[in-house]
Image (cartoon, rainbow, N blue to C red; front, side):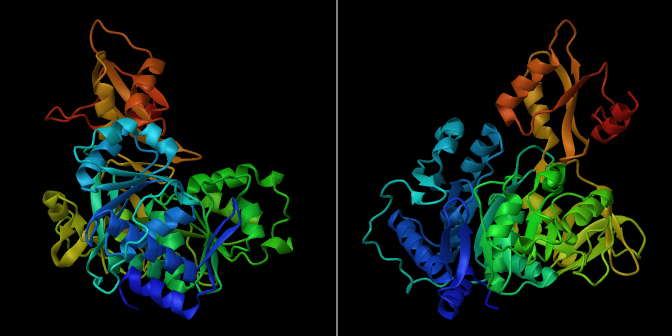
Length: 513
């Protein structure tokens, strides 16, 4: 398979131009592979008309929809670099990304333009702002209608940069993972390989296109296998199975939080799962982005009568790197599975392989691994062992059958509902309050989100602040999703010999309070 998005779309449009690629359940719009190619050509022409050229960055801040998916693919189709912006990030983080990514063009929905007006106006470059609807596209004329796409003049290579996706780091400043055309397609191919996808499969995509799981799994997976995807604007527990039934979806990709939501309202569904003919075509579900408790997996399978495949992926590996095999091969509860389409091993601090059963760091090598972190040579250098083995920061072991088990993290990242949250970002927000002397955010177990955010705070002598006051203060700076649901006031926070707060000791201290 050629390693460019352009080749895959051209080939699919020539082979099956009338085959559906994407369905929008809100209005029933169906976009065929032929229409996808035509829209990519049109968007490429529009970007060229705005002065964008191969290698340039193009950002978007949009909900899911057929035009968002088209823009996501068309930017890479044109040899440019797609920069999806995270809609649940706080204003300071979006401002940082807009400044750092070097994009000159931003497609933005009206409601996000209002929400992130401060971040957009703070960009040191003059941005070309395109007001856009996720379903229908730009709300007004946005380029010279007579512009030519320049298709005959460009050649996209598999090694060219294609996707710049920002992921939280332990410092609080997000890092831009730069993925090549080859890596983006490898992410789709690994998904197709793990789940035995064919051109008859149809995914239900309810994860946002600013998240690697939504992008690689439920867009690139169907694209490389010739299948199709049903893409509502956002997840809805009430509509989920109705969408799957009406549009004859054969598989779903979710995070553990969504699994919990679906179980919570299972008795309200109009279907008799395992019997209703409307859902007979459903083959499996897959879960990623956070560990899925074995009891939750068992409850899902018992209630909805389809196997749930636990997997593991990262932004830096174009999503899937491990997956449990499809039935009838054995699935191991508590394990995200075996290596799929890349090499994965357990290594010591020096990058040397450890025997099965010994705990070390997961390291990954393959065509799906990122080129590096954008404008951050130090982070790139420290993230690889020799021979391009990427350091995941996850601790675990491999059993004798090749299944991996995750035991912890070297990094202090909080994973809430599949989203990476840097605790340092929350610390920094709390430190801006005049009453806060010390602050440390940490993740704690949560039934719905996997982890939730709490913070431990020590106040300055002579100052006072309530939990609600600090939560409001924090929400204004990092957004509601990242704001601690609980703030614990402490006389002192645990510190090491150097005086550094020992964040990883906090969950244990909180559990005994």
